[in-house]
Length: 324
Image (cartoon, rainbow, N blue to C red; front, side, top):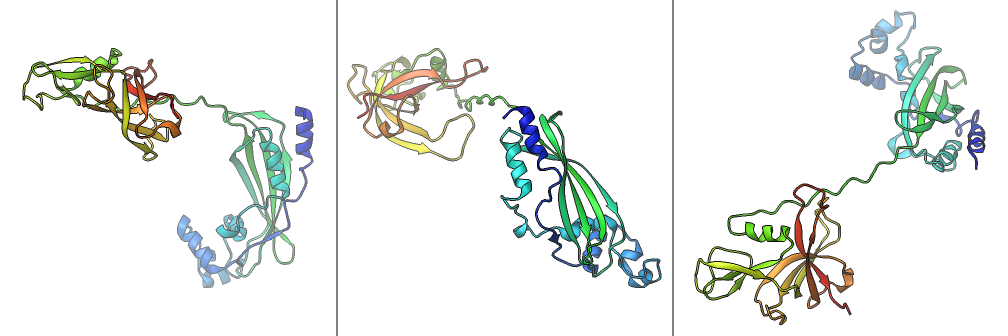
């Protein structure tokens, strides 16, 4: 459908009535008038005082003209639109061209007479006009104007309203950049380990006296109580000891579901699990079904965030090897 054909199709809705007349759920009544006046601070006695109203030119209580629309508002439970109505057919045509967003722009009401307590009000709605495509600050769209005529029980028009909206195509928004992960909580004892990761190295702390490996890093050897230590490169392999798959709470820095694995790191000679240390890490390049206890993994230090982000982290990731 060309742009001209699309506009012509829209014009076929102009002049059509939107469904049958809608009858207000309540007659014009004093309690609703009182609530309205209380809400907006209107103390005009012809709306609130029966004696004053009888002595006025109206001869009886009348409703504030600005309540016109209030008398025909449906209840919340019954306010859904008929998907087959003329108005919804027009909307679907607009949606087909991406005009999915809406905002009201203006309305004008005209009052022909005051409404009296006891009046039964109904409304008919007609699509008055649909503009050619316009460019606005919100995006390109079409202004849709409807006219509501309000009638009493005798069919007399007591007021009308012109109501205008714009159905517009929201401008495309670039996907927001994923924020960097929360920063590690570093201390004097473990900062060196994170510094090594930033340099692309996965290292393990080693006691300088008894050569026991330990992780997480700490100030004292748990085997011989020595305070002297150095570090060695960690083997790039291991076995999943346990795991959890996180679904909630959702943190924008991560993709979900989020597997978190505890890996038994291989010994320095490559023997499975003989290092006696375990490390927590996320997985990468692994099908969810392959992330299971006992799976062999390759360990790689990778960028955990966009490298262009200042302070972006590098962390160890587990990649399942030869999933069955």
